[in-house]
Structures are given as C-alpha cells and as structure tokens.
Image 1 (tube, helix red, strand yellow):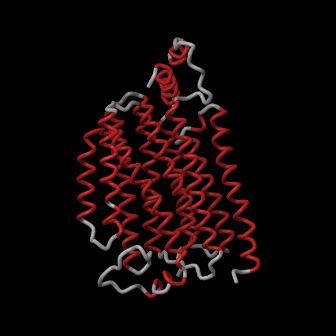
Image 2 (cartoon, rainbow over the protein chains, first blue to last red):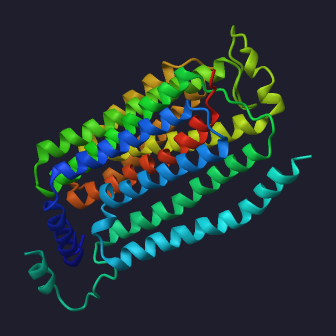
Image 3 (cartoon, each protein chain N blue to C red):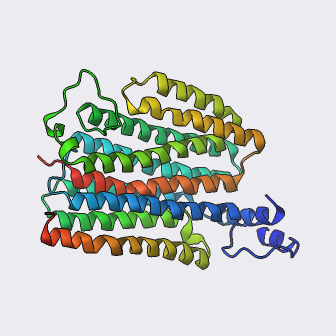
Length: 112
Length: 264
C-alpha cells in the first residue's frame, strides 16, 4: 500500500477508535429481538400478504442497522453513502419494475 | 495525526473522492454487484412462488428452530467481527485474533447446521436431478411429488441457500487467511479431507468439499506471491464482506423459511 493509501487507512482507523463497544452490543441485541419477533409472527394466523409486508419491513430495518453500524456506512462521507445506496436501490427498483406487473397479473388472473 | 500525515503526502496524488482507501472502495463495489446477484435470485424465488399455486411449505418447527439458531450464529458472528475490527484499529493483536477466530467459529456453526438441514431434506426426498439418490431412505410423503410437480421449489431453494452457503464458506476462509495467514493452509487442507472423506458419496457435500481444496490452492498461491502481515484496513475490508453475508441472510431467512413454515 502506498503512502497516501496508508495515510487514508490510518485516518479511517482513527475514526473507528472513537466507537465504544456498547453501541455494537445494542445493535446486536436489537437484531436478535427483531429476529425473535419475526419467528413469533410466523406462528400467528395472519394473511400472507400482511405477514410478508411486516417481515420485509423488519428485514429492511435489520439491513439498515447492519449497513449503518456494523459496516460503518453511517460514518462515511456523504458522497460514499449516497452513491453506494442510490446505485444499489436504483438497480433493485429496475428489477422490481419487471417483477411487479407480472406478479400482479398472476395474483389477479391466476396462473392458467 | 492522520490529517497531518495526509498533508505531508506529495501533491501528485488526487484526493480520495470517497474519503477512504481504495481497497475498501473496491470491496464496496464488489458487494454492490453481489447484492444484484442475490437480488436476482430472491426475485426468481419470489416469482416461482407466486406463479405456483401448490407451493410446498415443508419447514416444520424443527426446521424453523434450526434456521433461527443459524440466524443467531450469523448475527453473533457480525458482533464478533465488528469487535475484531475495533481490536485491530486499537492495535490489540491478541484480541483481534480471538475475535476473528470467534467469528470463524460462528460461521462454521452456521455452515454445519445448514449442511445438516440440507442433508435431512435430501434424505426425505427433496432433491435436484443432479443430486445422487440416497440409498435405503424412503421419501417422506409430503416430498414424494414435490420434486416432480413443483421443481421450482427445490431448484430455487437449493440455488439460493447454496449460493449463500458458498459465500459463508468463502468468508470463513477469507477470515482464516487474514487471521492466520500461511498457517491456515494446512488447516484448510485437513478440513477438506475431513469434509470429503467424512461425507457419504451420495451427499452433495462430498464433491462440494472440493471448494476447500480449490480455496487452499488459490490462497497458497496468493500468500506465496504476496506474503504480508494483514493490518487494520485488511481486517476492516474482510469485515465488510462478512457483514454482507449476514445482511443477505436477513432476507433469505424470512422469505424462504418463515414464509414457507408449516403451521400445524
């Protein structure tokens, strides 16, 4: 690694040094609690679409916690945050655009 | 201190657009592309599911408990990984090693539980045409026709979870190389022999174990060509990969397991 890269790595390491352990334990606890809620909801009689919406909602919250705190994206510069997240969300939206019309057609008209 | 170090660098270098080192940006770009791979697989699974009226719900309480424990293993491994990164930036080599090994242990626990679940499902009759037949096992009633009438289930289930299991396996190897460097190669070879000789010939893990041999050869070549002591930036980049496999599981677990639970 050249001098400039080493200096950047040292700068990033310096940012990491200010984070306490407690925060990571809180995030881990929150993730476990949300997992327990998901499993609990599985055994409740609930319409599948409603259950899917709740499970996906919880999954997105868990993903945000992992990306933000464990992957440290919350502490990166704005350009990094916006460019990475906007590009991946845009690509997933493109997939969804192709997925949902067919999904809706199948649900409304059936598969035959 | 770091800022002054940056100021002393000759001005031939352009400032970093993302305010971080290139290895980390490279890993983020790889993870973004991998997100699309898993996104496509999850969409394929969902599409197969809504277009198939008789989608099976084969996961009994035992399977759900197993998958929940697997999830707990992965979440705990993310915590130990972040503690390893923290130890590395504090230059605490001993703590870094302990947390990295703990992460690998949790990852291995996940793989073992997942492998056991796969083996049970295959023994009960849920299979792919490429899997050899399990001798001396009667297929369970609920799986007798699933592989024939709803082949999408086995294809998407094994495809999606297999891809994830491969990522976790490679993650454990990656962490092993960062933590133990050359010492990890003989361990990897022993693991390959145990996995290869310890699984029956009809198990997909019998030939899947060769991933470990290929990984040992590739890691051996890399460590021979470029031997180095991995620093905190390497641990952080490895951590990004590890958290990503955890992140993907946060979607596979509810979509594949919880939405296909058999509620009695």
